[in-house]
Image (cartoon, rainbow, N blue to C red):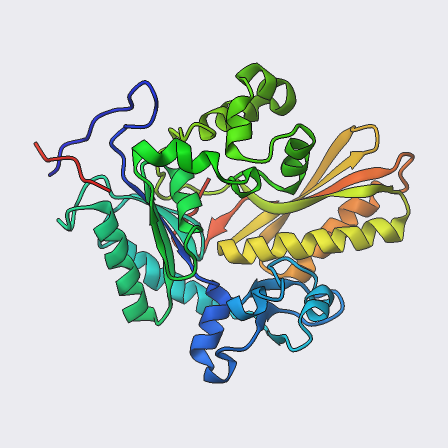
Length: 372
């Protein structure tokens, strides 16, 4: 059995780990186009076409029109009048996901799924004797194409943060290799909004602070980041330098899945708040279904205009597997907080007490060294 490779050095870069991030290309939409030849080459959205529908996934043909996942269906149709909607088939997506994970398992036991269509793999141990992490990534991509008829992109690097960034670099059906010597330079040239963990709200805050790129982030001292981003500062400080010590954690179960939304103007009337929560549910349920999990506890998060935040939760006796039930519990929790004396600036809804349809696997970390 190969011996463990060298530990972290002081820079955090040359730790010996070899990480692959595999990300399926437009997974749901690609499965639909694979199974129905009439859909191939057409702008396609998986999701509901009703007034309150939401896009769960979009084909690359639809993306050229600006159609994106979590976008309201009416907006997507406005951008692309010829858009074809198909209802999601999550049982099929889960089955294909299990095929893909079986391929991963041929090369490593250290697999950390993030959702049905992406995962981190630690291939520091060259179990298949292919000679490099790049060769392993290419073998995985070829096997996925041959056995599922789908394409995947991969990022190969020395940590999770950069591997995930790299997998998006040459999509679709591409691979990107970032060795340790190039990690910091690669990160410096990217917009911070691409960084994993930097959502729209954080990206806007960074923009107001003049932080647009990885280099901008690296130029800010740690105490500056701590003042503005609190406990998140240490992660950002390391990421801007290409440093990420998180290990690949196999079979790690997520604590919760959900979504929240901060409003441009505070809401106070009942109907406005209920409508806003429905839109939050659309985004949250898309993530829940993508994750392939079920849960029993629904938690409402409500932040007032004075930043006072409350949470209210309710647990069912059975797993909540239906969007309508998830919404109903959320609306009931919301109604119990009405009327509000102050406006509401944020609403969120999450599902916790999770279990998985895939054996609980979910993401949140003498031999020569295996080269990238």
